[in-house]
Amino acid sequence: MSQVFATTSSMTSPSRMLAGRDIQTLLLASLGGALEFYDFVVFVFFALPLSHLFFPPDTAPWLAQMQVYGIFAAGYLARPLGGIVMAHFGDRQGRKRMFTLSVFLMALPTLAIGLLPVYASAGALAPLLLLLMRVVQGVAIGGEVPGAWVFVAEHAPRGRVGFACACLTSGLTAGILIGSLTAAWINHHLTPEQVLGWGWRLPFLLGGVFGFIAVWLRRWLSETPVFAELRARKALSRELPLRQVLAGHGGSVVLSMAVTWMLTAAILVLILMLPNLVQKSFGIAADEAFFGNSLAAFCLGIGCIAFGWLTDRIGAARALLLGSLALPAVTYVLFADLAAGGAHFLPLYALTGFLVGAVGVVPTVMVAAFPAPIRYSGLSFAYNIAYAIFGASTATLIGYLAERAGRMAPAHYVAVTAVVSVAAALWLMASGKGKSADMA
Image (cartoon, rainbow, N blue to C red; front, side, top):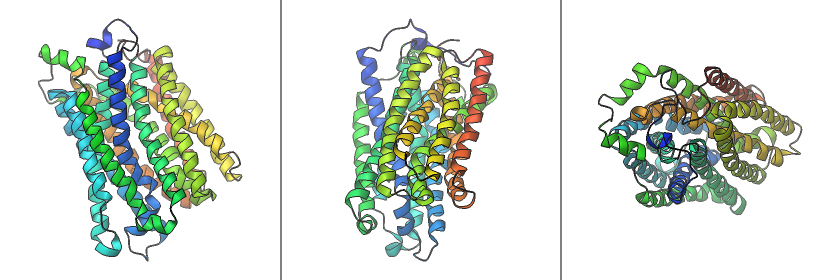
């Protein structure tokens, strides 16, 4: 694998603490990312009412839910398109421009979903419009997440890249917490009839407003020092960046896709889908399911920061190995408790959420795997292709397995992806390339 943990500019400067400007960049990037990620994930929290509203009333409940998860998955299939195009211009014209464009593209379809007609009034046009809006969301998030990681990593001082990337990831997961809290509030304060009648629209209308706030916030961000130096030295990629990635960095792409699979499974199965799964498979009440999810999402944010701190001290490979071993162990304990009645559901779900924070190590591995002139394109291609494959298949696969293959199936799936992540961590350790994001 060539140039793994390649360095440039501020990522090789002498180690220093985060300065005021660094903290401001992290806060603005993280807050904007949280608002945009809320827009993307709130869809899954309302999968049940959407399955009733956007498909014929005589559709079997399990089939309607599978169809909604299919529309949810379409957002993942669209991610590579947005990621590849935005990354190309991000490597050629600047990180900041694409960082602002992505959040604008997310706000528009999110607001539109809140205004869509349902099947009862628009017939088959309703699910088609929902699918179209979801695809546009996927295009936007495909450029947002990789761009955000590159942006904060290239602003971070030496020795703080792991913490900076993890803080940004924690900010993104805060969007999940906002979505979970919104879903919990709506399910608690509105009757099921009110949710189906108009309550489901609220989170999407709010999300559209949040998105435009994020656009405004990003006006205050500056271009990364790394890109500014590349432009000043006329060292920007002269060829198509993606062509360079595919021609000379295939190993980095494979590594990044492997760790992205674990990230995908942990976030999708244990955070986004679990509230609906525990209601259907284990009989947990909606209020308790979403309250537990809020706890888990909060602990996820803390866990990301903790693993980022650990990354800068023991190296990305060891931190990834630790998290990849601990996460499936606790996941099995959580599902075993649910199968026994769920007496300890809330504390175990909170602990699981904290260990899902191991995904905070993943962006450090990926950012460091590609040299600066093609970093955005390399990371974006690997991350979005992996998310398109695994994200699109996971939602429908887990829904099917939960119905047909037993209630422990989601835990088994998470364990399989953790094994792949362990293998990636061991490879990094054996090759000596997992010590730090800013060490050659």
